[in-house]
Image (cartoon, rainbow over the protein chains, first blue to last red):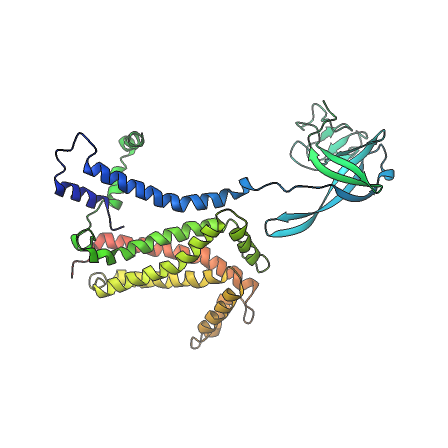
Amino acid sequence: MCLSYKYVKKFVEFEGGKGMSSKVTRRQFLNYSLMGVGSFMAAGMILPMGRFALDPLFKDAAAGSDIQTSIKVSEITEEPTKVDFTYNQKDAWYESEVTEFAWVYKEGDKLIALSPVCKHLGCTVTWAGDDGNPDKFFCPCHNGLYTKDGNNVPGTPPRGPLDQYEVGEKDGFVTIGKKFENELVK
Amino acid sequence: MLNRIYDWIDDRIDITPIWRDIADHEVPEHVNPAYHFSAFVYCFGGLTFFITVIQVLSGMFLTMYYVPDIVNAWNSVYYLQNDVAAGMIVRGMHHWGASLVVVMMFLHTLRVFFTGAYKSPRELNWVVGVLLFCVMLGLAFTGYLLPWDMKALFATKVGLDIAESVPFIGEWIKTLLAGDATIIGAQTLTRFFAIHVFFLPAALFVLMGIHFILIRRQGIAGPL
């Protein structure tokens, strides 16, 4: 704006600027002062806007609680069953009900729930979706295969086993909790 | 360190003449507040530009959260102001800057008028300046609707009624601006958004470019 670099230079020349070479010269001092004030003003603009833009990185993940489903535990067999679960999702200013599902089956008395999200590129896997593999999860996008415990079959695209859900029982119905890394496969 | 990086680049592509041509030019004594304090009135143009830069930057960041849709616009503004860190500051910069830029521009216009700087051979730059004034008021008008609160809605109703009062073509202007002959709603908001963030800023940048190039070609007007 009005106070230009040229003005500083002129001012220093006008004052002579000699005999102070051993220390910081007047010109250096003024230059540093200008740069300091300029940086301060720039930071005052950039920092709030930067923090504003980076906000998603600092948002806390929503705490999930166990979600009741409409599937009775007694209906679950050793064959993986699709169990829908619905929860309220708050997406910034938009709130909605979101329905996802898990593949749930019994291993003896124990309930096991697997996420249907393929570990290759995030498509949805289906139990026995491939006629040639009636005892495996199948991903139609790139023919990924998983065994019943979620382990990815070597030689197919997925890079890891299917995630697990915490699964429980409440009043005879299946409940679905948090997602975590598969612990059935070692 | 910075000096060495600068020298390395300068040795190869000779950038010094470029920035010298843009930034390193004489500020005449009669416009320099260091010599005559009253010359601070010559700062208003630069201040207008400075605030315009803040408006452009803060506006760019606001569009990361804002949606121009009648269902979500107000909620998105509420969210970005109250739930996003520094949202109050960034929206505040845009809000207060909008008023301040009009004030500064007005003071700049007064300065040019009363120092007679618009006179020959600088009439063209005065014309460009008046166009800039119109574009800036257009930005202020269209931006006012975007938060989609009651104040914005009724201010825009009034503004559109004023547009409608233009003889002969008033109704066409109003319908074009609002996107509908009777409703001020979904299409009004999207239109105002498009005008506010694409059309008018484009015009603003072109006019500012001409404004500054003309200043450099013609030099700063002499003292009173």
